[in-house]
Structure formats: C-alpha cells, structure tokens
Amino acid sequence: MSRRLPDFERVLSSQLAVHTVSPHAARSQTRVLLLATCACLLLLFTNAYPQRKRGALAGAGGQPAVVVDERLAALRDAPRLTANLVQRLGRGRAVAIIGARRVGDGLNFYRVAVTRRTRGWLQADALASPTRAGDDEKLLSLIRGSEEFDRIARARIFLDNFPRSPLRPAVLLLFGDEAEQAAAKLSRDAARRLDEREMAAGGAPLESYFLNFNELDRYNKQGITFVFERAAKRFRYDGESWREILRRHPRSPEAVQARRRLDALAPRAAVR
Image (cartoon, rainbow, N blue to C red):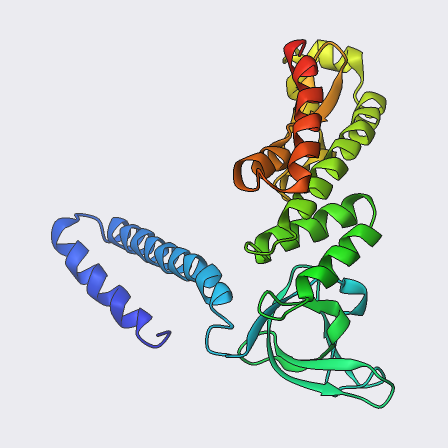
C-alpha cells in the first residue's frame, strides 16, 4: 500500500492540473484528497474493530463463560497456581471453555480461549457458564456474599448471562435493593461535594448538577437509573428491576416483596 501512494498522488496531480490554474493549488488539493482518503480508511478500520473484538471467540468453539470473580482470574500457561501468568482477566470478561482438568490439590481448572490466539488455564471458581448446570446457583451465592458495588456488578453479569435461570427473580430483587442502598450513599456524597453557591452561580437547574454527578457513572453502566428528589435533595432508585419481577415473574415469591418496594416508592415519587 505504501509503495503505491506516490503513484496515486501523481495521478491525482495530473488530473487536477487540467482543471487548476496554479500548480501550487493542485498540490494542495492533492494533499487534501489524500488526507480525506486516510481519514476514511481510519474510520473504516475503527468501526470494524469492535465487530472483530466481539467475534474473536466465534471460531473458538467450547462453552461460553464469563469471569465472575476477578480475584481468581489469573490466566496461566498450565493448570496449577504456580504456573506462569499469561494475563489477568477482568470481571465480566467473556471466554470459551475448551478443556478441563482436576489437579492434585483438589482444584479444578478450565482451559479457555480468551481470543483466537490467546489460550490458557483459569481456576474454575473464577468463571460461570450459562450452559453448565449449577453455575447460576454458584454465581447467586457469590452475589449474596458480595457487598455494595461488587454485588451490583456481579448481579448484572447474572442478569446478562442467565436469562432463563429460575433464580433470576432473586437476583433482580437483590439488584434493586443494593441500588436503593447505593442511592442513599450517593446522596450523601453529592451533598458533600456539590457546593450550593457554585450551583446557584452556574445557573443550571439544581437536578442537572446532581444527575450529572460523576459517581453515578459506574452505576449507569450497570443499567441503573437514579431519580432525583428535589425537595429532599437526594437520589432514589427508579425501581426498574422490581418492575421486571412483576412483569416477567409475577408468581414468584419475590413478586410480593417487589410490590412492597414499589408501593413504598410511590409516595416519594408524588412529592418529587
């Protein structure tokens, strides 16, 4: 490609020379066209990258799985805890299980494909797979043992990867309850960090400062929406996970509790 660019420039220059009076203007137009061409190629490759990344495991085969416990997600070159580290995987990282081995100390390891070229061994406890019986129970146990944002993030992984699990209503209830507790903490943090005089001087509506509070960002990425109560100057969870329980699992035991939580939100919404 690089060897052909000078020829391409000469062709463009010769074509432009027919319609342009000044040779300097012809060179300028050629440079503009070259820059535009490079920009288009860069945009093409940039747009294609996410598709390549999403499809990186398409040809790997095996069982789909996701990292749920990043503390154990050390990809190694052999199925033992002292083997060489290949890389560490973050929570929520998708992999494909292509093998398994039980080692002498009682630990289970999965051989996984991280990309088409990257393979390694992960401790089985780091992963959950929607195709493996009991992994939804294992993940729910981990969620219940987690706190604050870790509980929300792991519950989000469950909701994204186990759409048909009978444990889904329980996870939805936990997800909403933790989001409501987070709203109280975020309200205190925002009240401490947002200066009332600066907000008044800025001239924007009060709620816009609160709803743009940067600590909300990571919760928003987990699919959580907070509503701002102007009179009380506080956030509250909008209750969407509880509504999903009533829509999709109306006969579950969690539906009764979800209704109670939504009923408690109603008076607060009226005075928002």
